[in-house]
Length: 512
Image (tube, rainbow, N blue to C red; front, side, top):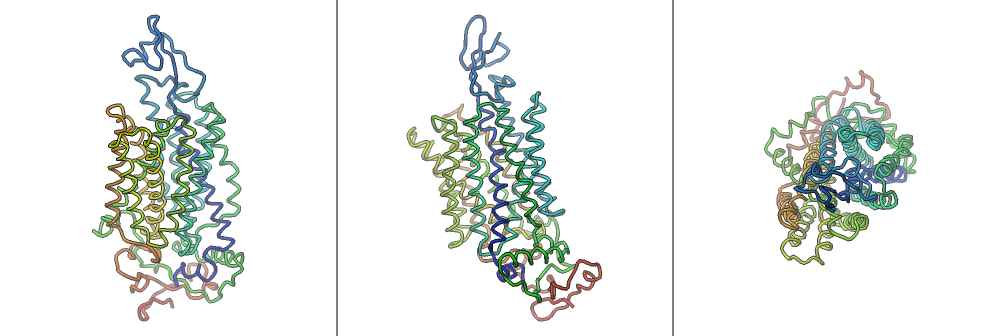
């Protein structure tokens, strides 16, 4: 049987898996404390420029900071812009900070995504958490702007690896029928994190203190590793069946289920095509699917962070607007959780992106200021829903052997969207609300292209790249799977692995 079938026997989402899942969800609650930190620490500074005896409020003669003989900043908000006088012709550097952070997230998504597939989900999760804490605290006390930029970059690298590892590990510890629901609950924690961070920012007006406190939230997470196991699916595909057996037995025992002594699990045979990410671009079918996913992640991220960063333009208070942008995501995830288990992943994904795109386009074309904020919030609701679905959908499209790497590749393109999002907002200097037109077109086009992807509802997770090449039930293809007969007796010794020879018996490959 497949590992998904094993979970059906020992519990798809029992008490022990709930403990694991909530623990991993807490990592996603922590992620916004870094990902949207700059919404508050990077606010524009209010100042008075004095030039030739004339005072200029929040502007400089000829937009040149060098033309000011002196600059007086208001006490609040205390931001990065105030710290290093990033105003007038130097103001672009505030946008650059968020883009550098997102560049780090993109690099981390690719490098650490592959790392998690190689060394394991749990080790990657632990290393990236320590990196987020270390680099985050260091950036809070940086005395030079270039040093601050560098540290924010590496914070982004670790944040990406942490999000991917926690999501993949959470999805690989639960049964197939609960994967969609849990994927949405996982995203709810991100929305709650936005709300909590907005509250923290409201009560901590100094950017250094806010950055340090936001980072320190992650310190207690270190103790969560006492509870968390490695993914049994990853362990089995890396020939570490004894450790996988221990994890599965613990889950069964804590769930109050009897662990079968004659348990048999299908695992990739030694000659199975495990491959690399490059193999995704060698077959037309996988090339189209991968390219659509990359573009979709790019659009999702650009619109999601674009609308989040535009919060200061949508309401009277940046704190209230940002908090509401987080609150509105919660009903999005509830609706999504219902839809994806009823009608699948692909249609809701496309529908939400199309509706989000239309909402953003209406902001530009109806020109009714009173409707701008509600339309933007509805757009944020839709794009949050599509972002939740796309994580689940992509995780089910990529095989286990490169699942983390595949999500890392898609996340790289998501971060490219996050990099350009702050600069898309500059389009409002040309035409008011023009940024929402761009967001609308991106979301609309991506929603239509997503119709080209396969539906994954009720399909067994693919294990190897060979699973992506056939049709129908992939477990019935010959020559690619070996059965672990009596997992109780099989260990990781070289003799056992050598004896895992395959012979064909009917449609299924059995071990001898």
